[in-house]
Each structure stands twice: as C-alpha cells, then as structure tokens.
Length: 456
Ligand code: NAD
Image (cartoon, protein in one colour):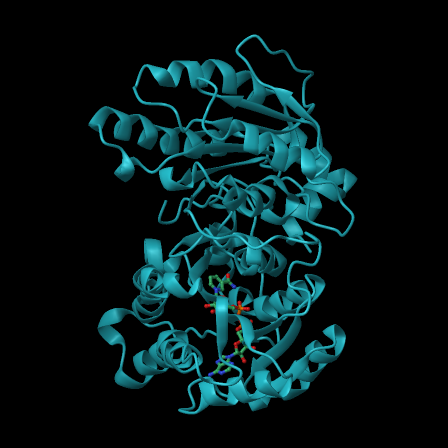
C-alpha cells in the first residue's frame, strides 16, 4: 500500500488535478512482482563497447527470460517510452575518451525507457584495472549510473554490476543478478553498484521457485519486513521457519500458517538461540539453505545521553545475536546447520551508512552488520557459502510509523522515487541474494532505498 500523499496525487481525481496545477511532486506508482509477470515491460536494448566481453551472454540471459532483445548502437532509434530496459556491457572501456562511445549508444536507449523500466550498466571493478586511466574510466561509470538514476522518471531505475574480470569466462554468474535488476522485483532498488565475482553456479531448474525443497530461517518474522521475507521465500519454494519472541507468538503463528511454515518462538539473544534454530531445521530432516537475520530494534537517544542498557539492547539484538547464531550454524558437523552453498543475509540500514540523529547505537549495530559480511565473505567462500546484507532505506512498517510526522515525511521523500519502500521490496532483494543462482554475489551490501540521498 502506498502512503496517503502518493495515493492522493496518483489515484484521487482531485488530487491529480491539484498536483498537476500546482506542480506538486507525483511519486510514481511502482511496478511490483506478480507471478507470471514478464521480466520487463518491453524490449531490452543491449549495447556494448567494442563488442564487449559479456554482451553475448547478456543477450542469451535476456532472451531466455522471454524478453525481446534489440542491438543498441549510436544510430538506433526507438519509439518513445517503448523500451523495458537499456543494458550496456561497458567492461571493455579503458580510457576516459571511450566514455563518449558509451554515451552515444546508451543515451538514446535511456531516453526511450518506459514506465518502471531499467537502465543497467555492466562494468568491471576499478580496483582490478592495471592502468589508472582504465580505473578512472570504470569508476566514472558509477557516477554516470547514479546520475541517470536521479534523472529517470515514472518509476524507472538505474543500477550497475561490477563484474569481476575473472568472471568474464563464467558469465552464468550474471543470470540471477541481471534478472533481478531488470525485473520488477528490484522496484525500490536504485543507484546501486553490486559486485559479482566468479563462482560455481548450480543449474537453475525453475526461476520461479529457485528455493524449492530448501529450508530457510527468517528472524523477526511476526510482522513487518520479516513477515514479508517469509512470504516471498515461501513463494520461491522454500519451507520457512519463522522466528520471533514469545510475546509475538500469536502473529508469528498466523505468518507460519499463511505460508505453510514452522513457527519458532525464540529470543535471538538467548545463548542457545543458534542451537534451537538448528534443532528446528533438523526436525525438518534437512540442512539449512538460508538464514535471514532480520530481527532488529531501535532505542533512539542522542549519543551523549545514551546509557549502558539502551545501548546494550540494540547491540545485542541487531549484531551480537547474529554473530553468535552464525558461529553455531557454521559448524559443518551440526545437524540442521548451514549447508555447503548456503546463504547468510543480514539486514542492515542506510542509518549505518549515512548515520542518523539519535541513532548512534542503531547505526553502530547496522554498520557492524556490513563490516561483518565484508570480512566473513572470503572466509566462507571455500564452502560456497555467501554472506551479504541489504540496507533498507525508509520502509513503510510499524517501526517507521512511530517516527514523528515531519521527520517521517522527509525520510519518505528524499529519494529518487519520492516515496517509502514496502516490506516486499526488501523481501525481494533478500530472496534474490538467497537464490542458488546468486553464488557470485558475496560480501556485498545492497541498498533497498529508492536511490536515497541519505549516505549517498
Ligand atoms: P519491526 O519492529 O516491525 O519488526 C521487527 C521484528 O523483530 C518484530 O516482530 C520483533 O518482535 C522482532 N524481534 C525484536 N527483537 C527480537 C529478539 N530479541 N528475538 C526475536 N525477534 C525479535 O521492524 P521492521 O521495520 O520490520 O524491520 C525489520 C528489520 O529491518 C530490522 O532489522 C530493522 O532494523 C531493519 N530496517 C527497517 C527499516 C524500516 O524503514 N522499517 C529501515 C532500515 C532497516
């Protein structure tokens, strides 16, 4: 459900008229995923620099999803608003002057993007370049992407994939990220660079249910974002164990019943929380495919006025519990522990990137989650376990409903899409990271913030 202002200026005839006459901002209605939906709203124009390194693979990824591909060149012409996506393989760009060739091809395609369409640049990490100018030219692409993202209208977004050079010969790692960014599942993900590296990618039998036959755990799932994550995981085929505190037992049971999952009443800060989770997984007779550390609390106070209890409770729930549970579940010999190729996903926050008044404790915990995934990723890589975080911006939940009106209204509008995200937007991003096909994505923080100015 969109916020009242968005509904008024988009759906109410009087509101539409007033917004048009006075020139009020009109937050676009975003296209969101529904089963059976086409990947994109129209054909996908794919361009490349000098033939590219992975343009052929991109074409086959898009074609195999059922979308039509057009070859983008500087001479290409498109009907206004006709394109579902513009994609560019920029991995071959080596000099600053090469960027002009990119501009000449990409700009006409971006100009023809329709409602909720996608601009996607595939670049290669600047740090991997052997030449400073090549690094500068590749980094320039991120700046371009972030600017395009702020220019696009009508729910269209721009993102970038940093494809590691060692993955040029294994482009199958791109399929899951490209599908995610082009689809409506990334409705509220904008202005984001995501690194994709080489990794063994299991064959995906059915993209609609990539977690079929798998067991997943979601903490803090009695309401809000966690309840949605559980729903989306169930849609993706997983059996979901939903975890929340005993006081939320009734709502937790409702969530579990709705999705045919299992409710586990548990305070994640309990010393045996990891063991209890593993027992519940083992009762399903399996190893764990994915754990989402979503449970989180705020106890806002200015840093100078904070106290040990308030500080400690935020740190305990938002980061210490996650570390302790991971340590337990990562024991390879534990029945119900995380399996080889498993997925750990933390829920951080843009507060942990940009900081927030009164939230030093919360920002500490959420920045900590980001530090954790970056540091643990290489350690877990030999077991093909990935660890990532999503950082939601302003999401419409009971947590944000408690924010005073004026602050809430600012928080909700200071992003390129001029609206708060919905719990499902965070859930879709997490489900993408949990897919077996996302094996090449690890140690990453993916923001789900509508291309927010905060921490930008
Ligand atoms: P919410 O308060 O609606 O839900 C959080 C859930 O976690 C609740 O059901 C709560 O009972 C549970 N929980 C709290 N402590 C627990 C514990 N010790 N053990 C087990 N469960 C516990 O919050 P939300 O808005 O849905 O947020 C979910 C996550 O997303 C949190 O980590 C939050 O920090 C993060 N986040 C939210 C936003 C937003 O805008 N809503 C933005 C950035 C990050």
